[in-house]
Amino acid sequence: MSAAIIDGKRAAEHLRAEIGRHVVRLREQHLVTPGLAVILVGEDPASQVYVRNKARQAREAAMASFEYRLPYSVPQEKVLELIERLNDDPAVHGILVQLPLPPQVDADRVINAIRPDKDIDGFHPVNAGALATGGDGMVPCTPLGCLMLLKHRLGDLAGLRAVVLGRSNIVGKPMAALLLRESCTVTVAHSKTRDLADECRRADILVAAVGRPRMVPGDWIKPGATVIDVGINRIDTPDGKGRLVGDVVFDSAVEVAGAITPVPGGVGPMTIACLLLNTLEAACRQHGLPVPQGLMEAAWG
Ligand SMILES: Nc1nc(=O)c2c([nH]1)NC[C@@H]1CN(c3ccc(C(=O)N[C@@H](CCC(=O)O)C(=O)O)cc3)C=[N+]21
Image (cartoon, rainbow, N blue to C red; front, side, top):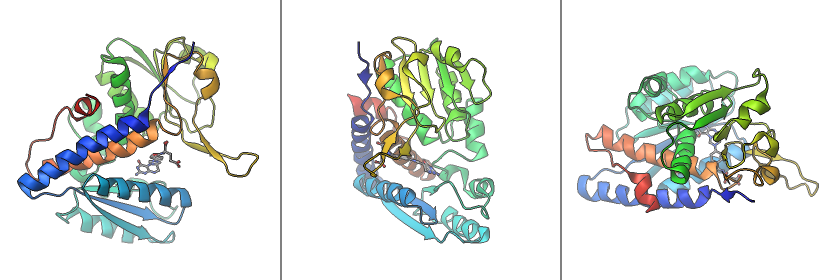
């Protein structure tokens, strides 16, 4: 038996198209154009590609996109000054500072400087706190994208056993909070977890977000489980071109799981679509307009 492949690329295309329709309506009816500002420090080639993709997809969804490139050696004060300026800029509704940052720039200070209602990554403590306590703040894009794929596949998640591998502030912890909000029974496993394989084998939903290439083999997976692979790891290949692999051994997992996300074409594209969704919502809130509801369900028909 072979798992269903969860097509994140296609789901993201649907979602972006639906977001684009809302953006056009917002401009026609309210003269508001959602604006996304992305700050990139340094010249890491992978980050550059990624930032370029975000800017292109923002424009394709009829949004305004502003890119700021700062040298790797930029002093922290300069980054904070730019954030202050964008906080006060009414054309900018969402601010994203690409992580990681160079050592002289303290990521926590930078994240804390972003106005919480413009924090489309959902990393600010105000938004993290809202998610943890059941309030409605900005939800981090990668976990939000994972949740959409899960609900699309499974419908109601209540009562399912979910295991989240990884406890980062950007994926693991918010993912666990979202699944708990959906009434899953949630386990967060990490590098110090004992009997990791057995923990994983109990999962109806397994979310792998550790950033270690092909760490999770097929025999850690319960037959029929839904597997969400958040890892995007570039590995070397004999031909020298390299390729992307997830945190899960896809070829063995696909034989056991009920459904699985591929890498590439799974979680990654959904992350960017959710970034645009958060920017649209931020623009609505900042202009006192109602936030469009049920966007993802509408996108999937
Ligand atoms: N403040 C901040 N927010 C982020 O959301 C953030 C960040 N910093 N730093 C870097 C990581 C990385 N990330 C990706 C998102 C989508 C793909 C993606 O769409 N990947 C394609 C493949 C792209 C390729 O071929 O290289 C896929 O999985 O199908 C990849 C990586 C967001 N990040």
